[in-house]
Length: 166
Length: 165
Image (tube, rainbow over all chains, first blue to last red; front, side, top):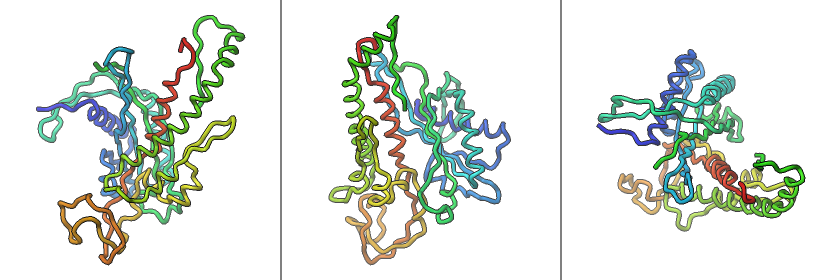
């Protein structure tokens, strides 16, 4: 039995949240993945409107909470890449995600056994303090791009757990 | 991004104006130096994110990330026209891309064995040569722009002027 540390908890909580919200809102054929290289192995099919979302927790800044103390506030940067099948789907999907992230999301602590998550307990919420919302452009004609790279969008989330770490 | 200046207590417009005049030069100096720091940070992010040996290799992307100061208007990092001309791949490196996968070129990895050898993984760099090579892996997203913007926001939040902020 082992437990995820905070960064993996945040990443997994976000993935679970997106999957759950997509399902509740009736989105189908959207795969949520956390490894960038695996995205290109997922078929993105225009005909079936099968899109993919990649969630990555990148740099984290730890800022001293009080002068003279070692406790810190954690500010993880989360990057969410959308690989859509059309411009319309790209815009709808990114607006949907922005809408659900505005309210923040539950933060879970996961316990695992081997490669399987055995349990999770909610311990607070992940606050989204800033969202950057930009289309990914490679500066060339889209038809010359590989299908995964044609209709991409990038959301950058500044997040916080809203608590001091000792 | 707007710069917010907070005042606490019961200052009137006269006191606020005096504060701004008093700290105007230091605010401008701090913001100007932040431009240089931001460009340096972006270069550091790029160089520290590279996984293959870099000694003696060209650094076109880092070399073409400059800060440009505009009198009374602030500054900007990274001239898109210059990058398009001298480091055309800047978007692919930032966002990640699969556009080269499947294409073929002629070359070899150096240093390293000409034949595939798992022990030499990521130890060499592709050079022009005689062996036909088919590119199999996508360019991973470095997101140096997003990471630099995050750095800049944190720096702006930490700027302090005057005694009460």
